Image: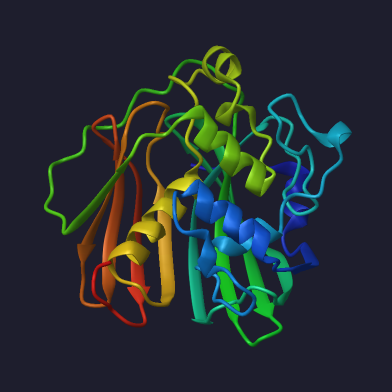
Length: 286
């Protein structure tokens, strides 16, 4: 089922171009947030896939933030008054050569699809934005990012089905804390209140607690891949399935495939996110 999205339909094809310098400090700060050695990010070092998110935070004035902390108009995402809530639903990324610390980065973004749907939680507008990034050292990334616009918060969404037990080859268990979520929000300049304001998250949005960022779950999946098989990730797809909440532990699990790994994050007995990775080179665990 579908519905009329009004003036938002005219935003298909909207573009934006930004430039940034890939300084080492944001990468070192994220490495510290992941409890990893920060000495590996000198000028010229390859940036792990996804870490370009550190260099293109939303450049929005404080007065343009909504009640939930999100931007009212990002320049790319349309304003749909009856769909005020926003959720990052997943991404698909491809990279033939990594970006590097010290690069001058250029990112061209385009709204490539607008898909209205009606689901169990009401009306949804799925927006796909294609980001094409190029670094001055020759690296590149193409990311298709899916964002869902949702209706105002109402009754609590029923939890998803319990995860079925499956075999896996590697696992890392992380207990999310408010400080972990705060650090990640600060690094990505994410002001969405569900990640740091528990009364707002539970009483207004109807969640069970502070919500772990979907992009943070994606970073944790690739961090596990890097720990067990260092090498370039040439492709990564991930999808949000259920919200994960503080303080329930996150079980990040990887299963070896012919081309890389199948990934999932479980929290409180349910799948929070899934992913698949293609690696250019498999290495020994470290």
